[in-house]
Image (cartoon, rainbow over all chains, first blue to last red; front, side):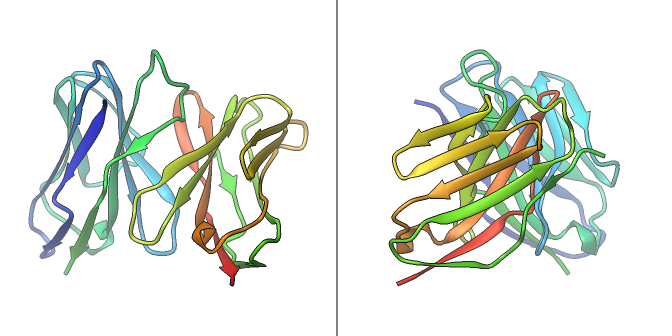
Length: 115
Length: 109
């Protein structure tokens, strides 16, 4: 069966510090991968999505970046965090062959607090 | 800008009654529509999806789609306290999944 791992669960970082969040998927190949952010009082905002290794589409131009170094690994990074980067970060995947687009499976999320 | 709109709530419904959640979307090219449930502090989980105009039923849940009105709804019959959560409407636009802000549902025991 397929599983998605996302870590860490919580993170407290000072303003200006770097960030690296990692997500891995097991039990499937060539998944579509997504990073979403959910800020307090706001909906799920699509940040990045990837249809393959090295293929990243950015939805929100800001100080975040994403990389997909391996088929089932998706990394969200920042060189310098801002206060506005605080939120609940969610990684998600779907199988573009077997699943309908939109049928997403989410990781357990990372609660990021930038102080 | 492609948008998905939902009433933020909270929507309070007595236990055993029908809860009705609504969603509108702006992009007429949207092909598929989804309802996710999110408990506080947890990640969303898919409960229903629909492609065609009309109703789709799955247990106590019914999704309704009206593409002409750009309107999607979710009905929850025989509401239970465990249904208390935030319900997110999502729309597939060119393989990008756009979410609404969600409606908080509170089932009153």
